Image (cartoon, rainbow, N blue to C red; front, side, top):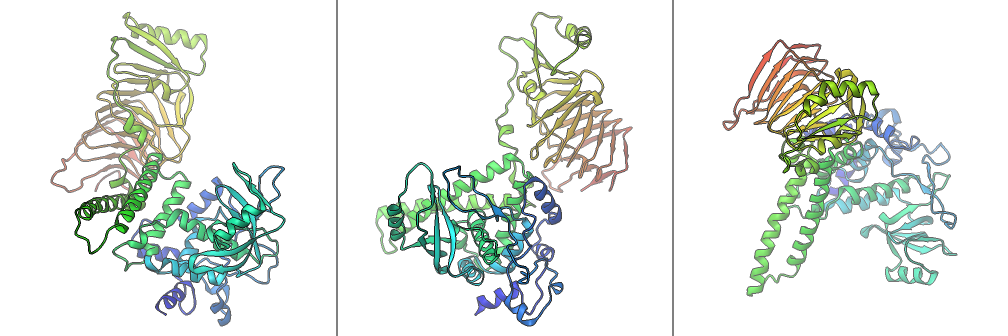
Length: 583
């Protein structure tokens, strides 16, 4: 009864359902703009525009005669007066030999739709130990009990079956083959007799997660198709094997686990999370899953009344695995929490960690790297006279040509020079500078443009002891991290233009930035972020049209050293907040 009363309060009835923003505020989590999330995802992925925001009819509200206008939660009740399906068809592409029917298109639901389904209908305020019971109760209300067809989809085959009963306690359906046999196989051949034997071995019970409802224009099975999609998505992307064994079971599972994991999933889909952090998260999930399996197997083999030496050894191993499991879970929680994700969880992406200083070449030779897709004879002559001949006056220098700047920088050793000829260079990966090199544009900054197209990672990362950038315009699109980050060493930047997307230039602890006569604008955060213990000299720069001009971070920790900052003749204007702010 306690479970049922909590479920009713969440899903509707006497009390109006809390809006999503109310729920998010109460959980003290970072609130991404849901409308922007939905719009961006709709644009990037071919979403189903005709999917209603809620197709789960609430019988209590219908009985009470409440109108749709009274529900401000954004979940519309299914209008039984409308005939026909409200979902689109998912066409199969199995080739000419495939005879399987189409299914409902449900995999491209928006964050908002999944959020409301889990919060108001499927999970409510259940505890981790109650998830399966609440899920079964939800499915009992919305899934047709019998007489519907579905594709039973596994890694080996897709076969058409008919559901004649439900076993919701185990989240399974009782199914029989539709004859004659209709199936697609991958790497094997299946006969009708083999499939019948397989069904008999499973007592004709098929996991609901593996069923995809066959498309039906009548609309009678829309709720069933959506319910199975929510079930499938939940156990694939949200649920963890160890959730049910959490010692602190007395908490709202949706607020603590479902919401942050759901938002992280959509942030990853929309490239709002750096690829390195995504890879780290997936690796942690795999390690945590393996560790949990090993711990569970070891625990199940222990005898509670045994004092044997073997059991004592197993107990010690079990404690080690438990500690390792808790460590993995804490790291996963940090990444899932948007407040902690970048402060504690992210140490730079995998490629950046692999990039190390090459030092000088063993031969002692220096290389001038020229970046250009093509150039005129006049440009080449000007380049020779102005830069190449002076740089190559000694016999220990050679010239290499590159079509884009990333490969040029990746080829550099200490003391090399990269000269970028006029043009617009679109790059898809970050530029990492681990050595003391010089990178300069041959012309005015507006003529030498390096543009980062893809989303996720930072643009330029500098860790070299003495790096020099000049006469280049950097343009950043749809980024997560700043346009330029000085992680260590010294970066000397002169006469550059930085068109930002998120944060501008970041000067990390123990790093040094000398920025002269540069123009920086467009940052949604601070134009320049200065961390404790860093050295920063800003002379004759323009910093404008950002949220804040210069952000100086003081973490009020005794171990932190105040940064050394020099500001001269800078024009900081037209920013939303402060010109210089200390936090």
